[in-house]
Length: 248
Ligand SMILES: [Fe+2]
Ligand SMILES: [Fe+2]
Image 1 (cartoon, rainbow, N blue to C red):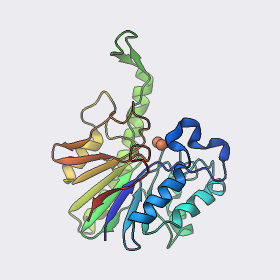
Image 2: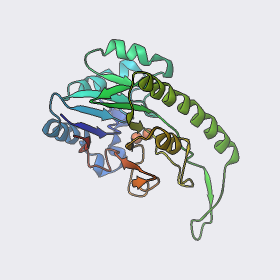
Image 3: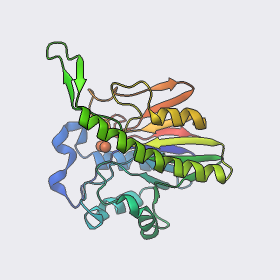
Image 4: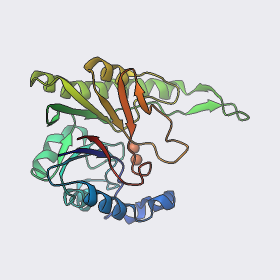
């Protein structure tokens, strides 16, 4: 029995015009690369957490083939909401859990267990700019204040969702946590955030996140151990579409 994670499959079976291939050769046939790797690694009694950006579908009908593709992969699949998952309306997590009962589990405002661990998570949010940079050295000299203020609101909303799941897990008696975020836990100008503070407060052993694509973005946030928590980036292209093992 093992726990695996990876993010950002960005499937487009019903929306081929949105294929990820437009973003470079790492994305060529990436869905089949991911499928082959997952089938080799993940056994039927394993759990695979997919950390968001599952589908380019603009609604549930357009996302259906993508979700069916995921449902056909081995193991218990837990899905986190990514910023591109338009098929997943914030208030319809229960509906998705009903539709895909026995096939997929959707993680938001709730938690799932893995042995004596509670798997908690939410989309999260971090400020991604716009930043004003010094054109010669690329040093950040400022940022868009209105966009920053908006990001504070989004962080607050995501924090509430995350805490709903954490509190439910605590009430059910869980004391060990693995935390999942779609967005990186910190922006490029932060060393700590609301999410790193929550991870430290609940004693999360690990924080797993994705969303960052391309070499120049892979190191936007924390990697490895920080204040006692282990942080791992699991964007599909960062992992060359091979999930990481989170727990045995
Ligand atoms: Fe993504
Ligand atoms: Fe994303």
